[in-house]
Length: 518
Ligand code: SGN
Ligand code: CA
Image (cartoon, rainbow, N blue to C red; front, side, top):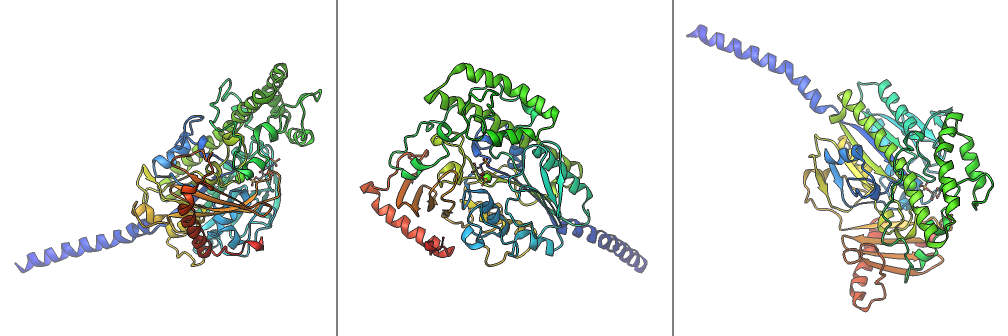
């Protein structure tokens, strides 16, 4: 009897020792901090991301992130322009709070950003691609960034202080450099890598390897292409109109040797194609020479010319999107091969949306839907259930708090965004009911007036100010194209008072009460 007890006790002790031996390994696995891969493009519209809209292009790799994770159906920016959006994402603060209100400023890199906090807490941090904040990156163990806007072909990069010429098509080169960094990192530490593409920014130069795409495709023209901007003065006075402002040579690559095709930007375009290697140039001319000859034979004018420009614009823009999608596929495959895919929070977004001919436009800046929105998908199976669809109003101030939260770090109290992790845990969690927007870059190339406003689930109230004093109100359910400004409608006055009150509350909350300072 006694012997049996001793044997049993011995067995239990062995099991306990074995179990204890396994424990640390399991805990290490559970406690392994997730990697963060934040992929961003420049000017990528929701209209050209098939998980949002499949009228124009299929983007299987981008879609995969959302399918295997979450797609945000109401994702917005705070200030629809490049440098400011980047500053917002880094700091988790609105433009007036991080100081970077427009593209002509130099970002104050001494302030707190999420890469700095991750780096201080054991992450290896790196950024590859577009930066566009003038000062050099801070908070990164490694940076390889384009100078300003960079070039689509054979661009220089500043790599940790040195200028490095890099032959090839920029979307491929950024991916190569990113994979190279991942390959050579210290695999003992978690990483935070920002892959920030130049594409799909103007002037939409495709990869010569993708010239076969979208040949002979006729793209549907948006209903609002011939908008007359009735009751919308700021919309009428912009300069981002496909018919009037998109250049046939510079934007649409129709440089004829005799100079018959009118352009204000001949020199810019010549400079740009002079950077191509002889092989790239040969492929370039082979693609565009027949298009130029065809264009000249048509003698287009007025509406026909505008519609022609729209089709040319769409063809090259979509080819740039296709490169992005292919290269994201390469990155996902790399992580999968290395066994890191499921331990990485993968986020894809753009610095803002873009007009694909809606209201007759290209570019962004306005608080109207196409440029207020930005695509946002995230994948991290440990926290996000596949096929999650989120409809809350989220904004790019929320990215920094989300990254910190996923990494198990405290979000600094002065960050103005909120972690999105709460929505992954509970789809019905308490969330903001309205977002605040403020755009400052006027006067500037595209002449979009300064404005601020509020957007709720249904309504949008905008105030254009500075050299103008005009309000606009839209009902996004009845008028999703934002063609009818309801601001002067008698029946809307109670709603307007309520929205103005809510707007003021948001300005107080985010501390943007003194507009005279800009
Ligand atoms: C450049 C473009 C503009 C664009 C701004 C801002 N002109 O100035 O069309 O609006 O960038 O874009 S270009 O002749 O250089 O193409 S941003 O995304 O970088 O903010
Ligand atoms: Ca941009």
